[in-house]
Image (cartoon, rainbow, N blue to C red; front, side, top):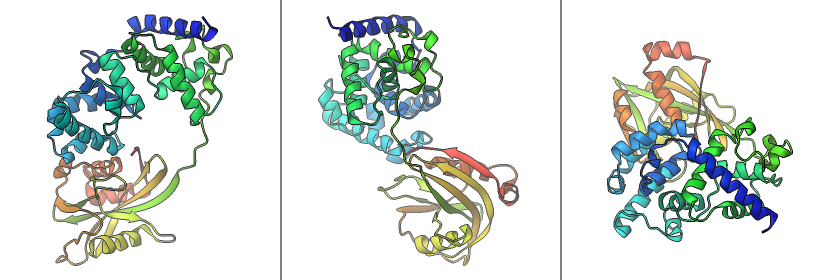
Length: 382
């Protein structure tokens, strides 16, 4: 038996022993239902367990099984996903649920290749469902697993390179003990979340420290090697809270492009040299064919996306002519709603932050004074 094979056996045995006593008590680990594994894995992409648990509980309370999910309106689904970001994942969940109902009698197929053919299920998610739900011998490589393996074997090529990804998947397959995929893959996930963390890994508590090259060579904190990432583009955006009596105007984004099918306050990007107020007036003219008068600034919200960051200038405003009615151009729906009614619509995270500001006891007018020049910070992903 070669040196690598011996090391892989040591890793597998040590990790399984650790998992027997150190595993996390998570709701989808009670019965290992494939539906619950699937939803948990999609929610956990780019999100930590402690953050997603309330979303998971609320989701399962409303959509306890595949038929309930498939039969729900998309807008309700997006509302329950609100705050997790990457809304395309929620739409793919909906598509997959309907396919499972129509073609698989609401039962997950127990074949990796068939899972890979479903919307939103990539190599990692398919491997997670197969191994955790069905205990099939399928490796998994996500961010946690990649971090562990690059430290364990001291991989020095950048994480984003194809050769690195191929090496990681090969190693994950070599390490996987036959017939123990459910426990082993979850052990890797727990180790990455609890011990082999991105910052300040707790090497002294790690069951793999004796065989970890990164620990031996004191380079664990420098692994994985990251590829160079472009600096996010900075954008200035103006949005208007158009008030008519006790209602505000909201519109629904089209089904394609950024944040499809989510609701928003009208507005858009500032042109070079343009003031936020001027941009607001121009956007309302171009997109809704109405004239508006900006009243006062409600808030400034800094909003970070994956590839760009936005400074959102939010103003309360009124119609220039009360007889005018919005004419939709880019949006697919628009309506007047009270602040309380906004809870029924799915909004991006930045808009939710704005809605929370609008609801503060000081009221909009005073809020416009107190928020002037102050920034509210919110980060989200799409």
